[in-house]
Image (cartoon, rainbow, N blue to C red; front, side):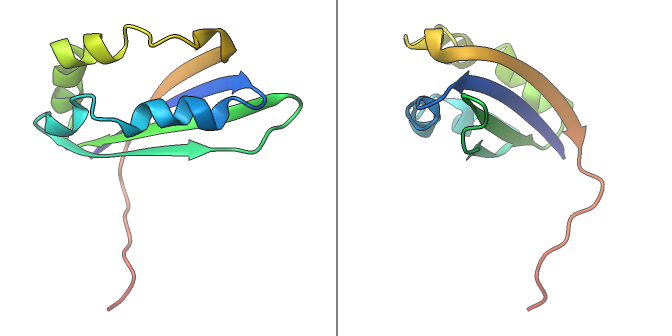
Length: 103
């Protein structure tokens, strides 16, 4: 499993609105190897809110397939409102341990 996190810093008061962009159908959910998407939102700190957009993939090839797809380009064209984004960083993690509750 591969987890990609896109950490997006936004001006205070704009995190929830920006997070809603990720709730619509943008094609990622139809991609081979896509497992799930989660968007995490932090409370404001020093005038900045943070979103962590986490996508989980079966492997790196599946993620690369997404980034090379027409759906990716379409969903990243910019829907306006990018002036509230203060910065972003992309990180990759490989899942090495996962635990589930006992049944």
